[in-house]
Image 1 (cartoon, rainbow, N blue to C red):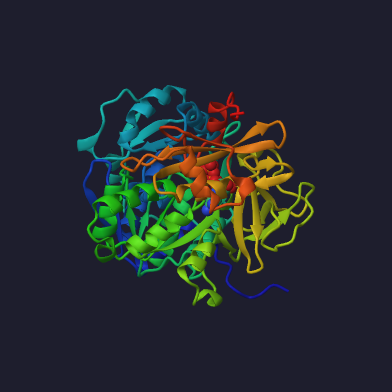
Image 2 (image 1 turned 120 degrees about the horizontal axis):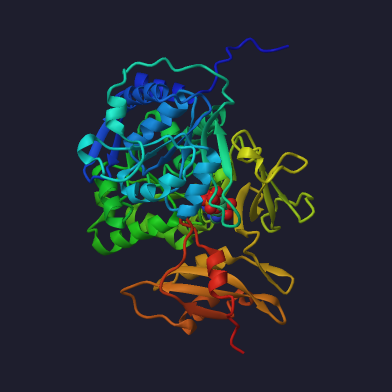
Length: 545
Ligand code: ADP
Protein backbone atom coordinates (compact mmCIF):
# COMPACT_ATOMS: atom_id res chain seq x y z
CA UNK A 1 0.00 0.00 0.00
CA UNK A 2 1.43 3.41 -0.94
CA UNK A 3 1.15 6.40 1.35
CA UNK A 4 -1.22 9.11 0.24
CA UNK A 5 1.19 12.01 0.26
CA UNK A 6 1.97 14.42 -2.57
CA UNK A 7 4.79 13.24 -4.75
CA UNK A 8 6.42 16.58 -5.50
CA UNK A 9 9.78 16.20 -7.24
CA UNK A 10 12.82 17.62 -5.44
CA UNK A 11 14.03 20.03 -8.12
CA UNK A 12 16.73 22.70 -7.94
CA UNK A 13 14.32 25.24 -9.41
CA UNK A 14 12.15 24.82 -6.29
CA UNK A 15 15.02 26.11 -4.15
CA UNK A 16 15.35 29.45 -5.91
CA UNK A 17 11.56 29.78 -6.06
CA UNK A 18 11.44 29.34 -2.30
CA UNK A 19 14.30 31.78 -1.71
CA UNK A 20 12.71 34.45 -3.88
CA UNK A 21 9.33 33.97 -2.16
CA UNK A 22 10.48 33.87 1.46
CA UNK A 23 13.92 35.50 1.48
CA UNK A 24 13.67 37.92 -1.44
CA UNK A 25 15.90 40.52 0.22
CA UNK A 26 18.60 38.19 1.55
CA UNK A 27 21.84 39.17 -0.10
CA UNK A 28 24.37 37.56 -2.39
CA UNK A 29 27.56 39.60 -2.11
CA UNK A 30 30.27 38.96 -4.70
CA UNK A 31 33.76 40.26 -5.17
CA UNK A 32 33.86 40.55 -8.93
CA UNK A 33 36.64 39.68 -11.32
CA UNK A 34 36.65 43.35 -12.30
CA UNK A 35 37.31 44.28 -8.66
CA UNK A 36 34.32 46.02 -7.08
CA UNK A 37 31.88 44.37 -4.67
CA UNK A 38 28.53 43.52 -6.25
CA UNK A 39 25.36 43.10 -4.20
CA UNK A 40 22.12 41.44 -5.24
CA UNK A 41 19.34 39.38 -3.67
CA UNK A 42 17.78 35.97 -4.12
CA UNK A 43 14.93 37.71 -5.95
CA UNK A 44 17.47 39.14 -8.42
CA UNK A 45 19.14 35.75 -8.83
CA UNK A 46 15.78 34.14 -9.60
CA UNK A 47 14.89 36.79 -12.14
CA UNK A 48 18.21 36.54 -13.94
CA UNK A 49 18.29 32.71 -13.67
CA UNK A 50 15.01 32.77 -15.57
CA UNK A 51 16.65 34.93 -18.22
CA UNK A 52 19.47 32.36 -18.35
CA UNK A 53 16.91 29.56 -18.79
CA UNK A 54 15.23 31.47 -21.61
CA UNK A 55 18.63 32.12 -23.20
CA UNK A 56 19.43 28.40 -23.01
CA UNK A 57 16.27 27.68 -24.97
CA UNK A 58 17.08 30.37 -27.51
CA UNK A 59 20.49 28.75 -27.96
CA UNK A 60 18.85 25.39 -28.54
CA UNK A 61 20.05 23.74 -25.34
CA UNK A 62 17.89 20.73 -24.54
CA UNK A 63 17.27 18.88 -21.28
CA UNK A 64 20.27 16.73 -20.43
CA UNK A 65 22.71 18.79 -22.55
CA UNK A 66 25.88 19.79 -20.74
CA UNK A 67 26.73 23.45 -20.30
CA UNK A 68 30.20 24.19 -18.96
CA UNK A 69 31.44 26.92 -16.65
CA UNK A 70 34.97 28.06 -15.91
CA UNK A 71 34.35 30.60 -13.22
CA UNK A 72 35.02 31.86 -9.70
CA UNK A 73 32.45 32.21 -6.95
CA UNK A 74 30.15 35.02 -7.96
CA UNK A 75 26.56 35.99 -8.64
CA UNK A 76 26.61 35.21 -12.36
CA UNK A 77 27.87 31.72 -11.61
CA UNK A 78 25.01 31.37 -9.13
CA UNK A 79 22.52 32.45 -11.82
CA UNK A 80 23.86 29.65 -14.02
CA UNK A 81 23.52 27.15 -11.16
CA UNK A 82 19.78 27.78 -11.08
CA UNK A 83 19.10 28.78 -14.69
CA UNK A 84 20.92 25.91 -16.42
CA UNK A 85 19.91 23.11 -14.02
CA UNK A 86 16.45 24.60 -13.53
CA UNK A 87 15.61 24.32 -17.22
CA UNK A 88 16.75 20.68 -17.24
CA UNK A 89 20.25 20.99 -18.67
CA UNK A 90 23.36 19.84 -16.78
CA UNK A 91 25.73 22.42 -15.33
CA UNK A 92 29.27 21.17 -15.83
CA UNK A 93 31.53 23.16 -13.52
CA UNK A 94 35.14 22.97 -14.66
CA UNK A 95 38.06 23.47 -12.29
CA UNK A 96 40.32 26.10 -13.92
CA UNK A 97 43.26 24.91 -11.83
CA UNK A 98 43.40 21.61 -13.70
CA UNK A 99 46.06 21.25 -16.37
CA UNK A 100 44.87 22.67 -19.73
CA UNK A 101 45.03 19.16 -21.23
CA UNK A 102 42.71 17.92 -18.47
CA UNK A 103 40.27 20.78 -19.10
CA UNK A 104 40.27 19.97 -22.79
CA UNK A 105 39.74 16.29 -21.99
CA UNK A 106 36.79 16.82 -19.67
CA UNK A 107 35.03 19.40 -21.88
CA UNK A 108 35.22 16.91 -24.74
CA UNK A 109 34.31 13.96 -22.55
CA UNK A 110 31.28 15.84 -21.20
CA UNK A 111 30.42 17.05 -24.72
CA UNK A 112 29.76 20.54 -23.43
CA UNK A 113 27.52 22.53 -25.80
CA UNK A 114 28.41 25.96 -24.47
CA UNK A 115 31.02 27.24 -22.04
CA UNK A 116 30.55 30.25 -19.78
CA UNK A 117 33.81 31.74 -18.50
CA UNK A 118 35.05 34.52 -16.26
CA UNK A 119 37.18 36.97 -18.20
CA UNK A 120 40.22 36.04 -16.11
CA UNK A 121 40.24 32.77 -18.07
CA UNK A 122 40.12 34.41 -21.51
CA UNK A 123 43.65 33.36 -22.49
CA UNK A 124 42.96 29.78 -21.41
CA UNK A 125 39.75 29.64 -23.44
CA UNK A 126 41.46 31.23 -26.43
CA UNK A 127 44.07 28.47 -26.32
CA UNK A 128 41.63 25.60 -25.77
CA UNK A 129 38.65 26.72 -27.90
CA UNK A 130 39.83 25.12 -31.16
CA UNK A 131 40.20 21.79 -29.37
CA UNK A 132 36.83 21.78 -27.61
CA UNK A 133 34.96 19.96 -30.31
CA UNK A 134 31.37 19.99 -29.06
CA UNK A 135 31.27 23.62 -27.92
CA UNK A 136 29.11 25.84 -30.14
CA UNK A 137 29.94 29.16 -28.49
CA UNK A 138 31.80 30.67 -25.54
CA UNK A 139 30.10 33.17 -23.28
CA UNK A 140 32.18 35.72 -21.36
CA UNK A 141 30.53 36.32 -17.99
CA UNK A 142 30.67 40.09 -18.10
CA UNK A 143 29.02 43.12 -19.62
CA UNK A 144 29.71 44.83 -22.92
CA UNK A 145 32.06 47.38 -21.35
CA UNK A 146 34.36 44.67 -19.98
CA UNK A 147 34.32 42.28 -22.93
CA UNK A 148 37.75 40.87 -23.67
CA UNK A 149 39.22 41.18 -27.12
CA UNK A 150 40.20 37.67 -28.01
CA UNK A 151 40.28 35.26 -30.87
CA UNK A 152 37.50 33.00 -29.62
CA UNK A 153 35.02 31.61 -32.14
CA UNK A 154 31.41 32.53 -31.42
CA UNK A 155 32.27 34.75 -28.46
CA UNK A 156 29.13 36.04 -26.72
CA UNK A 157 28.69 38.63 -23.97
CA UNK A 158 26.74 37.27 -20.96
CA UNK A 159 24.82 40.46 -20.23
CA UNK A 160 23.88 40.84 -23.90
CA UNK A 161 22.80 37.22 -24.05
CA UNK A 162 20.48 37.28 -21.05
CA UNK A 163 19.56 40.97 -21.29
CA UNK A 164 17.32 40.43 -24.29
CA UNK A 165 15.42 37.54 -22.69
CA UNK A 166 12.13 37.79 -20.75
CA UNK A 167 12.36 37.79 -16.95
CA UNK A 168 9.58 35.23 -16.64
CA UNK A 169 10.01 31.54 -17.22
CA UNK A 170 7.95 28.51 -16.21
CA UNK A 171 10.36 25.98 -14.69
CA UNK A 172 9.61 22.58 -16.20
CA UNK A 173 8.68 19.69 -13.93
CA UNK A 174 10.51 16.43 -14.49
CA UNK A 175 11.84 13.38 -12.67
CA UNK A 176 13.87 14.43 -9.62
CA UNK A 177 16.45 11.78 -10.51
CA UNK A 178 17.38 13.74 -13.66
CA UNK A 179 21.00 14.92 -13.86
CA UNK A 180 21.54 18.48 -12.60
CA UNK A 181 25.29 19.05 -12.52
CA UNK A 182 28.56 17.38 -13.37
CA UNK A 183 31.95 17.66 -11.68
CA UNK A 184 35.12 15.76 -12.53
CA UNK A 185 37.47 14.37 -9.90
CA UNK A 186 40.97 15.76 -10.00
CA UNK A 187 42.32 12.51 -11.41
CA UNK A 188 45.62 12.24 -9.59
CA UNK A 189 46.05 8.96 -11.47
CA UNK A 190 44.61 8.49 -14.95
CA UNK A 191 41.98 10.69 -16.52
CA UNK A 192 39.51 12.67 -14.40
CA UNK A 193 36.16 10.93 -13.93
CA UNK A 194 32.76 12.64 -14.04
CA UNK A 195 30.43 12.61 -11.05
CA UNK A 196 26.89 13.32 -12.21
CA UNK A 197 24.67 14.77 -9.49
CA UNK A 198 20.88 14.67 -9.67
CA UNK A 199 18.24 17.18 -8.59
CA UNK A 200 17.18 14.79 -5.86
CA UNK A 201 20.71 14.23 -4.52
CA UNK A 202 21.44 17.97 -4.55
CA UNK A 203 18.26 18.90 -2.70
CA UNK A 204 18.68 16.14 -0.09
CA UNK A 205 22.28 17.23 0.45
CA UNK A 206 21.08 20.81 0.91
CA UNK A 207 18.76 19.68 3.71
CA UNK A 208 21.84 18.26 5.43
CA UNK A 209 23.75 21.53 5.08
CA UNK A 210 20.81 23.39 6.64
CA UNK A 211 20.30 21.02 9.56
CA UNK A 212 21.59 22.06 12.97
CA UNK A 213 23.80 19.02 13.39
CA UNK A 214 24.78 19.33 9.75
CA UNK A 215 26.47 22.59 8.78
CA UNK A 216 23.71 24.59 10.45
CA UNK A 217 23.31 27.04 7.58
CA UNK A 218 20.34 29.30 8.32
CA UNK A 219 18.67 32.58 7.39
CA UNK A 220 20.47 34.27 10.28
CA UNK A 221 23.91 33.34 8.94
CA UNK A 222 26.19 35.31 6.68
CA UNK A 223 28.25 32.60 5.00
CA UNK A 224 31.60 33.15 3.30
CA UNK A 225 31.83 30.50 0.62
CA UNK A 226 35.55 30.15 -0.10
CA UNK A 227 35.11 26.58 -1.35
CA UNK A 228 34.97 26.99 -5.10
CA UNK A 229 31.79 26.81 -7.13
CA UNK A 230 33.90 25.08 -9.76
CA UNK A 231 34.42 22.03 -7.56
CA UNK A 232 31.64 19.86 -6.05
CA UNK A 233 29.14 22.74 -6.25
CA UNK A 234 30.96 24.66 -3.48
CA UNK A 235 29.93 21.92 -1.04
CA UNK A 236 26.31 22.55 -2.12
CA UNK A 237 26.23 26.05 -0.60
CA UNK A 238 24.37 27.80 -3.45
CA UNK A 239 21.53 25.27 -3.10
CA UNK A 240 21.58 25.24 0.70
CA UNK A 241 21.74 29.04 0.82
CA UNK A 242 18.60 29.27 -1.30
CA UNK A 243 16.90 26.61 0.80
CA UNK A 244 17.30 28.59 4.04
CA UNK A 245 17.81 32.15 2.76
CA UNK A 246 21.31 32.60 4.19
CA UNK A 247 23.30 35.61 3.07
CA UNK A 248 26.10 34.31 0.84
CA UNK A 249 29.43 36.08 0.46
CA UNK A 250 31.31 35.00 -2.66
CA UNK A 251 35.01 35.95 -2.81
CA UNK A 252 35.61 35.76 -6.57
CA UNK A 253 39.26 35.26 -7.46
CA UNK A 254 40.68 37.02 -4.37
CA UNK A 255 41.60 34.22 -1.98
CA UNK A 256 44.49 35.96 -0.21
CA UNK A 257 44.35 36.47 3.55
CA UNK A 258 43.77 40.22 3.39
CA UNK A 259 40.87 40.06 0.94
CA UNK A 260 39.15 37.29 2.88
CA UNK A 261 39.68 39.05 6.21
CA UNK A 262 38.10 42.21 4.86
CA UNK A 263 35.08 40.35 3.52
CA UNK A 264 34.60 38.56 6.86
CA UNK A 265 34.76 41.88 8.69
CA UNK A 266 32.76 44.05 6.28
CA UNK A 267 30.00 41.55 5.50
CA UNK A 268 29.41 40.39 9.08
CA UNK A 269 30.38 36.85 8.16
CA UNK A 270 29.32 34.36 10.85
CA UNK A 271 30.17 31.11 9.08
CA UNK A 272 33.03 30.49 6.65
CA UNK A 273 33.79 27.39 4.62
CA UNK A 274 37.09 26.43 3.04
CA UNK A 275 40.12 24.15 2.82
CA UNK A 276 43.12 24.40 5.19
CA UNK A 277 45.49 26.02 2.68
CA UNK A 278 43.18 29.04 2.37
CA UNK A 279 42.71 29.33 6.12
CA UNK A 280 46.46 29.21 6.56
CA UNK A 281 46.71 32.46 4.58
CA UNK A 282 43.84 34.06 6.49
CA UNK A 283 45.34 33.20 9.87
CA UNK A 284 48.78 34.46 8.85
CA UNK A 285 47.25 37.75 7.75
CA UNK A 286 45.23 38.11 10.94
CA UNK A 287 48.21 37.27 13.16
CA UNK A 288 50.39 39.88 11.50
CA UNK A 289 48.04 42.69 10.60
CA UNK A 290 44.77 42.70 12.45
CA UNK A 291 44.56 44.72 15.64
CA UNK A 292 41.88 42.75 17.41
CA UNK A 293 40.19 40.08 15.29
CA UNK A 294 37.95 38.95 18.14
CA UNK A 295 36.41 42.41 18.37
CA UNK A 296 36.46 43.23 14.68
CA UNK A 297 34.77 40.01 13.58
CA UNK A 298 31.52 38.22 14.34
CA UNK A 299 32.78 34.97 12.86
CA UNK A 300 31.39 32.12 14.97
CA UNK A 301 32.13 28.96 12.99
CA UNK A 302 34.67 27.90 10.38
CA UNK A 303 34.02 24.72 8.43
CA UNK A 304 37.24 23.01 7.34
CA UNK A 305 37.29 20.12 4.90
CA UNK A 306 39.03 18.83 1.81
CA UNK A 307 42.16 18.02 3.81
CA UNK A 308 42.60 17.35 7.47
CA UNK A 309 42.32 20.32 9.84
CA UNK A 310 45.45 20.45 12.00
CA UNK A 311 44.98 20.88 15.74
CA UNK A 312 47.04 24.09 15.66
CA UNK A 313 44.61 25.55 13.11
CA UNK A 314 41.54 24.67 15.20
CA UNK A 315 43.21 26.30 18.18
CA UNK A 316 44.29 29.40 16.26
CA UNK A 317 40.75 30.10 15.01
CA UNK A 318 39.47 29.78 18.54
CA UNK A 319 42.07 31.90 20.31
CA UNK A 320 42.57 34.51 17.60
CA UNK A 321 39.06 34.96 16.27
CA UNK A 322 36.81 33.26 18.80
CA UNK A 323 35.56 30.94 16.05
CA UNK A 324 34.75 27.27 16.51
CA UNK A 325 36.17 24.94 13.88
CA UNK A 326 33.70 22.45 12.45
CA UNK A 327 35.80 19.77 10.82
CA UNK A 328 34.08 17.96 7.95
CA UNK A 329 35.00 15.24 5.50
CA UNK A 330 33.72 14.16 2.14
CA UNK A 331 34.60 13.83 -1.49
CA UNK A 332 33.48 14.71 -5.02
CA UNK A 333 31.67 11.38 -5.26
CA UNK A 334 29.69 12.31 -2.10
CA UNK A 335 28.28 15.72 -3.10
CA UNK A 336 30.60 16.10 -0.96
CA UNK A 337 29.58 15.91 2.71
CA UNK A 338 30.01 12.62 4.55
CA UNK A 339 30.82 13.42 8.18
CA UNK A 340 30.68 16.56 10.32
CA UNK A 341 32.40 17.12 13.65
CA UNK A 342 29.79 18.62 15.93
CA UNK A 343 29.75 18.12 19.68
CA UNK A 344 27.52 15.86 21.76
CA UNK A 345 25.92 16.81 25.09
CA UNK A 346 28.67 14.92 26.95
CA UNK A 347 31.26 17.37 25.55
CA UNK A 348 29.61 20.44 27.04
CA UNK A 349 32.06 20.64 29.92
CA UNK A 350 35.11 19.46 28.00
CA UNK A 351 38.28 21.53 28.41
CA UNK A 352 39.75 23.22 25.34
CA UNK A 353 42.40 20.49 25.16
CA UNK A 354 39.80 17.71 25.26
CA UNK A 355 37.67 19.50 22.73
CA UNK A 356 40.58 19.95 20.33
CA UNK A 357 41.30 16.21 20.61
CA UNK A 358 37.81 15.72 19.26
CA UNK A 359 37.81 18.52 16.68
CA UNK A 360 40.75 17.04 14.78
CA UNK A 361 38.57 14.04 14.00
CA UNK A 362 36.52 14.35 10.80
CA UNK A 363 33.25 13.89 12.64
CA UNK A 364 30.20 11.71 12.93
CA UNK A 365 28.13 10.17 10.21
CA UNK A 366 25.12 12.25 9.24
CA UNK A 367 21.71 10.88 8.36
CA UNK A 368 21.93 9.90 4.72
CA UNK A 369 25.49 8.57 4.84
CA UNK A 370 26.13 5.04 6.07
CA UNK A 371 29.75 4.30 6.96
CA UNK A 372 31.61 1.02 7.29
CA UNK A 373 35.22 -0.02 7.81
CA UNK A 374 36.58 -3.13 6.17
CA UNK A 375 39.82 -5.07 5.88
CA UNK A 376 41.54 -5.78 2.56
CA UNK A 377 39.08 -8.60 1.83
CA UNK A 378 35.98 -6.53 2.48
CA UNK A 379 35.17 -7.98 5.93
CA UNK A 380 33.67 -5.47 8.33
CA UNK A 381 35.92 -4.16 11.12
CA UNK A 382 34.81 -2.91 14.55
CA UNK A 383 34.08 0.77 15.27
CA UNK A 384 36.25 0.83 18.38
CA UNK A 385 38.31 3.95 17.79
CA UNK A 386 41.55 2.02 17.25
CA UNK A 387 41.01 -0.45 14.40
CA UNK A 388 41.83 1.29 11.12
CA UNK A 389 40.26 0.07 7.90
CA UNK A 390 39.08 0.99 4.44
CA UNK A 391 36.26 3.51 4.72
CA UNK A 392 33.20 2.76 2.58
CA UNK A 393 30.00 4.74 2.21
CA UNK A 394 26.43 4.36 0.97
CA UNK A 395 23.64 6.91 0.63
CA UNK A 396 21.32 8.93 -1.60
CA UNK A 397 23.90 11.64 -2.44
CA UNK A 398 26.76 9.23 -3.14
CA UNK A 399 27.75 8.22 -6.70
CA UNK A 400 26.54 4.97 -8.16
CA UNK A 401 28.83 5.10 -11.18
CA UNK A 402 30.96 7.60 -13.09
CA UNK A 403 29.78 9.48 -16.16
CA UNK A 404 29.85 7.29 -19.29
CA UNK A 405 30.47 4.41 -16.87
CA UNK A 406 34.20 5.14 -16.71
CA UNK A 407 35.84 2.61 -14.42
CA UNK A 408 32.84 0.25 -14.54
CA UNK A 409 31.22 -0.83 -11.28
CA UNK A 410 32.35 1.25 -8.31
CA UNK A 411 30.26 -0.39 -5.56
CA UNK A 412 30.91 -3.47 -3.45
CA UNK A 413 28.40 -6.30 -2.99
CA UNK A 414 26.54 -4.28 -0.34
CA UNK A 415 26.43 -1.25 -2.69
CA UNK A 416 29.01 0.70 -0.67
CA UNK A 417 31.51 2.97 -2.43
CA UNK A 418 35.18 2.68 -1.41
CA UNK A 419 36.41 6.17 -0.55
CA UNK A 420 40.08 5.21 -0.80
CA UNK A 421 40.55 6.56 2.73
CA UNK A 422 41.78 4.68 5.79
CA UNK A 423 39.96 5.57 9.00
CA UNK A 424 38.94 4.62 12.51
CA UNK A 425 35.46 5.17 13.96
CA UNK A 426 35.16 5.47 17.73
CA UNK A 427 32.40 4.30 20.07
CA UNK A 428 30.63 7.68 19.79
CA UNK A 429 30.70 7.41 15.99
CA UNK A 430 33.47 9.98 15.42
CA UNK A 431 35.43 9.05 12.32
CA UNK A 432 39.12 9.86 11.99
CA UNK A 433 40.94 9.70 8.67
CA UNK A 434 44.44 8.37 9.18
CA UNK A 435 45.45 8.36 5.52
CA UNK A 436 44.63 7.85 1.90
CA UNK A 437 45.07 4.11 1.37
CA UNK A 438 47.87 4.82 -1.10
CA UNK A 439 49.71 7.15 1.30
CA UNK A 440 49.91 5.07 4.50
CA UNK A 441 53.43 4.25 5.55
CA UNK A 442 53.87 0.56 6.20
CA UNK A 443 56.63 0.22 8.73
CA UNK A 444 57.53 -3.20 10.17
CA UNK A 445 54.01 -4.54 9.66
CA UNK A 446 52.40 -1.51 11.37
CA UNK A 447 50.88 1.59 9.77
CA UNK A 448 52.11 5.11 10.40
CA UNK A 449 49.56 7.83 9.63
CA UNK A 450 51.17 10.40 7.36
CA UNK A 451 48.31 12.84 8.12
CA UNK A 452 48.79 12.66 11.90
CA UNK A 453 52.53 13.20 11.50
CA UNK A 454 51.98 16.17 9.18
CA UNK A 455 49.48 17.75 11.54
CA UNK A 456 51.85 17.30 14.47
CA UNK A 457 54.63 18.98 12.48
CA UNK A 458 52.58 22.02 11.43
CA UNK A 459 51.87 22.63 15.10
CA UNK A 460 55.53 23.63 15.50
CA UNK A 461 56.21 27.36 15.31
CA UNK A 462 58.26 28.03 12.21
CA UNK A 463 56.59 25.31 10.11
CA UNK A 464 54.29 26.60 7.37
CA UNK A 465 53.50 23.29 5.68
CA UNK A 466 54.51 19.69 6.20
CA UNK A 467 54.18 16.52 4.17
CA UNK A 468 55.18 12.97 4.99
CA UNK A 469 55.90 10.27 2.45
CA UNK A 470 57.11 6.69 2.86
CA UNK A 471 60.60 5.89 1.63
CA UNK A 472 61.75 2.30 1.05
CA UNK A 473 63.78 0.93 3.94
CA UNK A 474 65.84 -2.30 3.88
CA UNK A 475 64.73 -3.42 7.32
CA UNK A 476 61.31 -1.83 7.99
CA UNK A 477 59.90 -1.89 4.44
CA UNK A 478 59.09 1.84 4.61
CA UNK A 479 59.98 4.72 6.92
CA UNK A 480 58.61 8.28 7.03
CA UNK A 481 60.41 11.20 5.43
CA UNK A 482 59.17 14.57 6.66
CA UNK A 483 59.25 17.41 4.14
CA UNK A 484 58.82 20.94 5.46
CA UNK A 485 58.25 24.42 4.11
CA UNK A 486 59.48 26.92 6.68
CA UNK A 487 57.37 29.89 7.76
CA UNK A 488 58.85 33.17 6.59
CA UNK A 489 59.85 35.72 9.26
CA UNK A 490 60.34 33.01 11.92
CA UNK A 491 63.56 31.85 13.58
CA UNK A 492 65.21 29.28 11.32
CA UNK A 493 64.43 25.70 12.37
CA UNK A 494 66.55 22.66 11.50
CA UNK A 495 66.13 18.89 11.51
CA UNK A 496 67.11 18.46 15.17
CA UNK A 497 64.63 21.12 16.32
CA UNK A 498 61.86 19.39 14.43
CA UNK A 499 62.67 15.91 15.74
CA UNK A 500 62.94 17.24 19.26
CA UNK A 501 59.54 18.92 18.93
CA UNK A 502 57.92 15.79 17.52
CA UNK A 503 59.25 13.59 20.33
CA UNK A 504 56.59 14.97 22.64
CA UNK A 505 53.86 14.74 20.00
CA UNK A 506 54.00 11.25 18.49
CA UNK A 507 55.03 7.69 19.37
CA UNK A 508 58.81 7.16 19.18
CA UNK A 509 58.63 4.65 16.34
CA UNK A 510 56.67 7.20 14.28
CA UNK A 511 59.52 9.72 14.35
CA UNK A 512 60.61 10.45 10.78
CA UNK A 513 63.96 9.02 9.76
CA UNK A 514 64.85 12.31 8.13
CA UNK A 515 63.59 15.87 7.78
CA UNK A 516 64.19 17.90 4.62
CA UNK A 517 63.26 21.47 3.80
CA UNK A 518 61.89 22.72 0.49
CA UNK A 519 60.76 26.15 -0.74
CA UNK A 520 57.26 25.30 -1.89
CA UNK A 521 54.84 22.38 -1.57
CA UNK A 522 53.14 21.00 -4.69
CA UNK A 523 49.32 21.15 -4.44
CA UNK A 524 46.52 19.56 -6.44
CA UNK A 525 43.88 21.57 -8.28
CA UNK A 526 41.76 21.39 -5.11
CA UNK A 527 44.48 22.55 -2.74
CA UNK A 528 45.57 19.19 -1.34
CA UNK A 529 49.17 18.14 -0.86
CA UNK A 530 50.27 16.46 -4.04
CA UNK A 531 51.93 13.34 -2.67
CA UNK A 532 52.47 11.87 -6.13
CA UNK A 533 54.58 14.87 -7.10
CA UNK A 534 56.51 14.64 -3.82
CA UNK A 535 57.17 10.95 -4.30
CA UNK A 536 58.43 11.78 -7.78
CA UNK A 537 60.59 14.60 -6.42
CA UNK A 538 62.16 12.25 -3.84
CA UNK A 539 62.28 9.08 -5.93
CA UNK A 540 66.08 8.86 -5.73
CA UNK A 541 66.22 9.87 -2.09
CA UNK A 542 67.91 7.47 0.36
CA UNK A 543 67.93 7.86 4.14
CA UNK A 544 71.29 8.87 5.62
CA UNK A 545 73.16 5.79 6.79
P1 ADP B 1 39.70 15.82 -5.49
O1 ADP B 1 39.29 17.20 -5.24
O2 ADP B 1 41.16 15.61 -5.26
O3 ADP B 1 39.11 15.21 -6.68
P2 ADP B 1 37.96 15.30 -3.46
O4 ADP B 1 37.72 16.73 -3.33
O5 ADP B 1 36.86 14.41 -3.83
O6 ADP B 1 39.10 14.98 -4.39
O7 ADP B 1 38.70 14.81 -2.17
C1 ADP B 1 38.30 13.73 -1.42
C2 ADP B 1 39.40 13.29 -0.49
O8 ADP B 1 39.93 14.39 0.25
C3 ADP B 1 38.90 12.35 0.57
O9 ADP B 1 38.76 11.05 0.10
C4 ADP B 1 39.97 12.50 1.63
O10 ADP B 1 41.10 11.75 1.34
C5 ADP B 1 40.34 13.95 1.53
N1 ADP B 1 39.64 14.71 2.56
C6 ADP B 1 38.52 15.44 2.45
N2 ADP B 1 38.21 16.02 3.61
C7 ADP B 1 39.13 15.63 4.51
C8 ADP B 1 39.36 15.87 5.89
N3 ADP B 1 38.58 16.65 6.61
N4 ADP B 1 40.43 15.29 6.46
C9 ADP B 1 41.25 14.49 5.76
N5 ADP B 1 41.10 14.23 4.46
C10 ADP B 1 40.06 14.78 3.83
